[in-house]
Length: 132
Image (cartoon, rainbow, N blue to C red):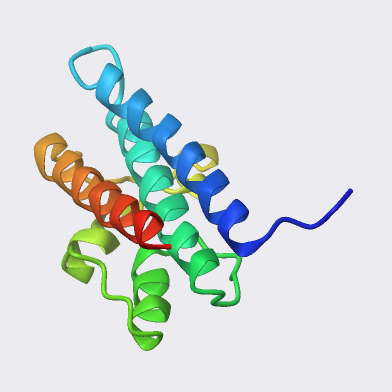
């Protein structure tokens, strides 16, 4: 099996991020869907999009779900996401570990701001992918 190019990896990550964003958008209006599920899809979409830009710029990938950390790595390489790092970090609590640890109490998800983050990151990444 051949290795993916940086662009192929970035495009694949972006497609997968789009799937999480679609799930978030479809589930937002359903009162039976918990904040942890909505937050998870928002966090995963943003994480994958940030990692897509990292792949495109050939920034070494890191195994982390911490959106603030990923934003920091991108900024060091001259790529500044269009969202305040604090807003990104607010979604990190909904990453994979929360789904398996009932002891963690995440704050209520503010759906509109979370969707704003997802939309802004999506537009930013689409622009980056279109430039190459």
